[in-house]
Image (cartoon, rainbow, N blue to C red; front, side):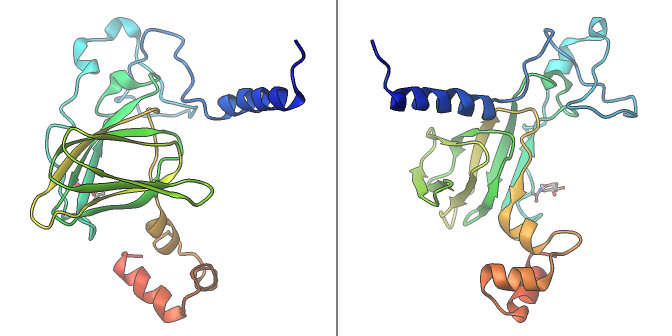
Length: 222
Ligand SMILES: *[C@@H]1O[C@H](CO)[C@@H](O)[C@H](O)[C@H]1NC(C)=O
């Protein structure tokens, strides 16, 4: 059978792409409990581990997600708490993490992205929540979620969660395909970076005046 050049190209691109979107590297041992005690003096891709014979069950457990986060700590009305190599040393090298997301009534997790992970979120509590992301061709996908529903945010794409119930808070739990997903909020990284982006850059990028730049900066604590 003769393979068409188109098909060949398609499969080649698929192979190339799957290399680009791969998650964290595979572990070379059962586990690599993060060393949270020794001050780190050399830096590598990941976190050094303790002697595996010193591993105990406790290293694989955490209560980090048991308590609601403070949704008043920012002007948006949400808080997210992640598992990481500090509060759950046993997840080091496993290529995954979790978070709990508390959203106050009318609260918003503003548009942001996780450069190193896809995210699947499940709504546990609340009434009406809008989840959405924008793909690289600028197309918006949104879905109204109810408790029990899940939604997936593809790796690195800008997404948000809006609890448009004016009375009831919402609670979600998310899983991530990296032990260190990273979070970059579009409004914060543009208007509240340290040091600040030049005014001219923001004025041109957003087609706004210098006063607009100053006002948004002030609002976002920039
Ligand atoms: C979540 O709450 C904690 C504890 O009050 C606070 O330190 C943290 O900055 C909050 N996170 C956000 C994103 O506001």
